[in-house]
Structures are given as C-alpha cells and as structure tokens.
Amino acid sequence: MKNLILSAVFAVFTLTAFAKGDDVPSAVKTKFASLYPTVKKAKWDKEEANYEASFELNEVETSVLFDANGNVLETETEIAVSALPNGVADYISKNYAGQKIKETAKIVDANGVITYEAEVKAGDLIFDATGNFLKKIVEAEDDDDEKDGKDKD
Image (cartoon, rainbow, N blue to C red):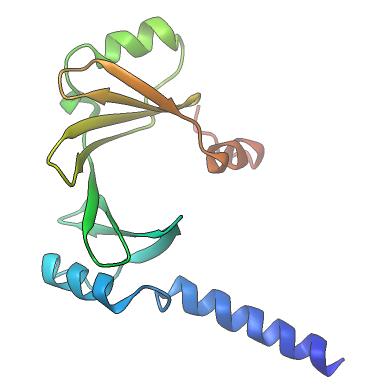
C-alpha cells in the first residue's frame, strides 16, 4: 500500500513539475527570458526533443519552439484571418467546402522563412508567403477535441 501511495505522490509531483516548466533546460529558459523579458507566464510543452513556450505578448497568442540548447527553431504568432495571403481563403473554400477557419497564425522559422497556418476541422493547412498550399497537418489532439465535443464547427 505504501508503494502505491508513494507512486501516486511521485506521479503528481512529476506532472506538476513538468507543467511548471521545471524540465526545461536552463539554456532554453535563459534564451526565452532574454527574448521576452516582459513575459512572466508561459506554458511549456515538450515536442519530441524540443521545447515550446506558449504565452501572450501584447494580447497576441504566441509560441516559440526551442531546441535543447536554446536555439529558436520557429516562432508562431496568431493573426487575423484577413492577414492571410491572397488565395488562402479561396483554396479553403474550394477544397474544404463548408469548413470555417478556426485559427490562423504566421510562422517564421530559424532561417526567416515565413509560412501561414489556417486551422480548419480537417486539420492545420500550411501555406507559403504567397498563399500557395504546402501541406496539411492532422494532430491527434484535434481528434480528441472532436471526441470531447470541443469542436467549434
């Protein structure tokens, strides 16, 4: 019985520590603090070998993906649907008829390459800076949202 209780306490402690970002390498935290000194609250997630900080900056949802050494791999910033490149809305209307754009973002990778993301029920659609479709990303999380009734369509 003691082992079960100890295991439960350890599991809760581990989950709480991760939720607070305690598992994030100090190089990543230091780089984040130097780039965003005014941000006091960030949610940290581990994406494979990388670390993502999600936060609000000037009332705009933002996320930054770092490698374990603190190098920025990409920055994603929420944008208005109207800020998407020309042609994106037409592509979605034609290929995903009846699906509304839920969220949109501008993504800048480490090399300064800009892409745009438009989230629809079918997944995240990625476009280049001129509005050409590049790929569709379907995340397992999106499926869970739909099963839980959290789908916004």
